[in-house]
Image (tube, rainbow, N blue to C red):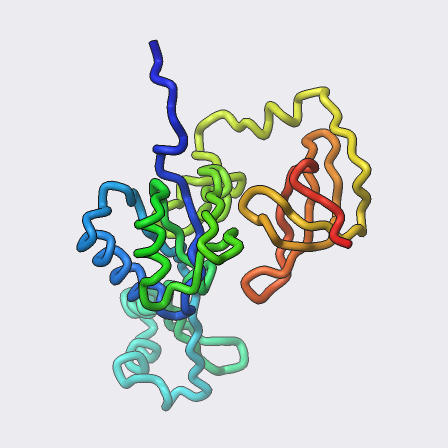
Amino acid sequence: MAKKIDWKLEPRWYILNVIGGKEKAIIKELKERVKNHDYSDLVAEVVELEVNKKNEKKFYSFDELPVKIQNLFNDHTEAANKQLQEAGYVKNKDGSYSRFSKVVGNKTPGYIYIKMVYDQNLWYIIRNTSGVLGFLGSSGKGAKPNPISDSEFNKTAAGTIGYENLTKDGEVEGQESKKVEEEQSSQVYDTDLQVGQTVRVINGMWKGESGVIKLLDSAKGLAKVEIHLFGRVQTVDAKYDDLILDV
């Protein structure tokens, strides 16, 4: 007989708001504090979501290039061109030069993710770690924060370093998509919500956020809501039942 999972004892994902630019140092200190207080068994993962970004450095004249690179450009051999390509150097149409390199950046600056079994003492340890500003989805004053589902985390993590096997829908590549099954369903979801209305999310990953409805999908019971997140406008999916008018 299959064991019935008690989700209260299963690790869940929580979002921590932290000081931007110090995510790695905060994660290191957080892990050390958890270990020192003997709560490691309750914490499965602590991560920041990183992505590879392309960085361009411009050289406006040939003389600005390193001598070694100048020699390669003057060589005109296949071997020299290969070395230039590997080093990321290109000559632009306007006569300038560029060097392209990959840099790692945080997809969600100012936020890290922790998968843990909730415990009041553990919450206190995390909340009082230097650089941690609070739990996203908590009203403060000691209130228990709201976790997000694995699916919600996967959608955010998709395409980041270490999570390249996740699709933009938060599913593992190669597995049959539940989304396809929903699209094939004949069920239609009714709602009094309308495009253009301002709503507030009351459940899920985006709980507490407000935004404007841009699209209603009655086949899936989902609304696309435009919210301001991480300093920019972002469109997120929310279930009809998770939305109320923000008046």
